[in-house]
Length: 314
Image 1 (cartoon, rainbow, N blue to C red):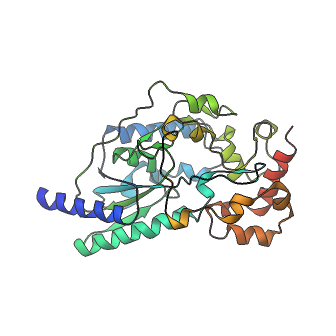
Image 2 (image 1 turned 90 degrees about the vertical axis):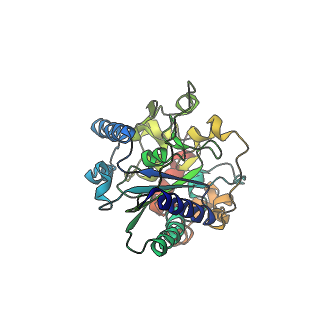
């Protein structure tokens, strides 16, 4: 494909992505800059240090080479979807991370990206593509940074200068030769508010989060019957994830627009849940409430464990 056609196709693909409701859109060229190799090496060090805790899927060798995801891949379309909603839950005795307030974001992103992919197929019938979200064995944050839609902050989340870090990521890998954007440059500067605010010191150094210490890991992924005492003592009211490092980030103190995406609006039960009510729910009620939520990975017994943990927290 010549440069003129590449520029035109890139323009059309980006316009389609914005039309589908994405708030940030960028293109990266495979194999990427030297930064991708640096991010891959950083992941290896993170794994060797055991910071993944029991998330064994993080060790998948497929993450090391994007070709493992799609043979012949030449370009990566990175997209960001704002999930910030300007509201608060009514009872204050339970806190749930914002990412889980609405419908399962994996499905929301996949649905939108599939429409972009179908559009690409019409433009280039012989092209191949693959959709990746954060469940894929793929360096999603590194490629988002490479595509210019944000930089990796010291809390390890992608930060966009317009919508902060309240942003879901998605990627469309393509065999088409698209025109790349400039990679984002980290501009957190000397700020370490996220590091200082973490109650368990899980952010052991800039960009390095030790899952063994992370409240989000323990409330979402830990399958033990009891949580560690040092985690319980620092939980506050967090029973599903944790937003502390994002809440204090200066880039999230701006006038961030509240998302209008219907599927990301808070479920009624999320905004009105209380300890007393939650502990009275049956397994079937938990499953009904969690059916279309990204929080369904938390089993009913885990919710009770987490809620009892904060109830017993001195």
